[in-house]
Each structure stands twice: as C-alpha cells, then as structure tokens.
Amino acid sequence: MSNSGGLKRKADNHDGKHDKKRPVPPWALGLKSSMEDPALRVEDDDKVVIIKDKYPKARQHYLILPKEDICNLKSLNAEHIPLLKHMQKKGQELADKSPQCQFRLGYHGIPSMSQVHLHVISQDFDSPCLKTKKHWNSFTSEYFIDSSDVIKQLEEKGSVKVDTGKFEGYLKQALKCHVCKKDFKTMPALKSHILQHAPKKTS
DNA sequence: GTTCTAGAAC
DNA sequence: GTTCTAGAAC
Image (cartoon, rainbow, N blue to C red; front, side, top):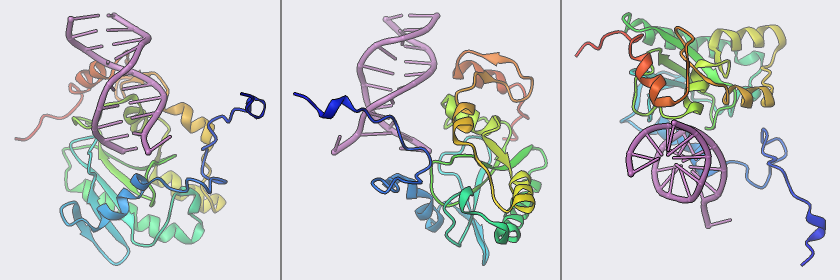
C-alpha cells in the first residue's frame, strides 16, 4: 500500500514551459478552426483574419488573429510590432463603425486558446455568454492588457512580460463594476447592475 | 475555451 | 426550498 512516499504533485501547469505531456488540449485549438469558419468570419486581408467571438461577452465582440502562427504573448518579439499595429488599426476601424458603443482593444494575459488574438469588445458586457467571475475579471481587471500597452512593451523591451501568479490572482478579485466601481457579491447582481451603464439598444 | 453538476450559500 | 459558484472533464 505504500506509494513512493506520498509525493503529491501540485498543479504544475503554469505556462506550459516544461509541459511536454499535455502540450495543448484539443479544445485550445478552437480558434484555428474558427478562423476558417465562414459563418464567423467578418473580413480578412493578407495578414489577419477578423472573426466574431463564438461566445461573445458583450453586444459586440470580435477577435483579430494573425494568419501567421503565433501561439501567445510570450512568442512575440520586436519584429511583430508592425503586425500588432496593423491588428490594432483593423480593430479600431471596426470600433469606429459603432460610435454609439465604447470599446476596448486588448489581450488576455493568460489566454485559454492558442493563437494570439486581439479582443475588440464593447464595454456594455451585455451578453448571456458572460457568466462567471473569470469571464468578468478577464475583461475588466488588469488581466486585460490594452493593445497599446503590448506594443509599448515590445518597443521598450522587445518582449511581453506576464507574471503568471499575479495574473491568476486578477481572475479571483472581487466583483466590481467597471464603470462606477461598486462591489457585488454575485454575477447575476453585477450583470443586472451594469445594464444601467450600457447605452440603449437600437432595435 | 465550455458544459455539467455537487454542494455551498442563501 | 432555490440560487449560485467552482472544479472535473480519462
């Protein structure tokens, strides 16, 4: 009944650096196939594809992905700056089409899905797909890194630094309205509150 | 990333 | 009793 001294392995999936056993779970490749899905595609050019997020967390939620394979923020270097600026420009053009909405353009510090993707998301967060504290904090805490900050880091340091422990902490922060900073105990309470900050829907 | 659901919270 | 969250998914 002895089992090699009861050595227990703590969760050791930090950033996949030494994780040869489970490199990428199948679902983490979902964006790659979404990029090919005509039903989701908004537009594309020689460098990037723009798709609708399959589970939008706001009234408007798009993803801009490079056609070149780039796994995540850690894969980025100074050579990618023109590409990232192009992605931001395409995103800003999209946002400018809906002047009644406020948008943010940015990246998740630790994305679940492979292939770098720029979120273009309206700040109403009025969507049935927005359900969990993780969802909320991933778009409204420091977990969401503005595109301009990613580009700035690349320009200044040549790489993007993401402190895994710190970013995991951001996801667990207490629920707080992103507009008026009021605290909430539950997601349903927060979701009903933020409707009063959202612009009126135009049929 | 989502779905499912046990059990915590109310 | 119902609502809500959080962890497993072979």
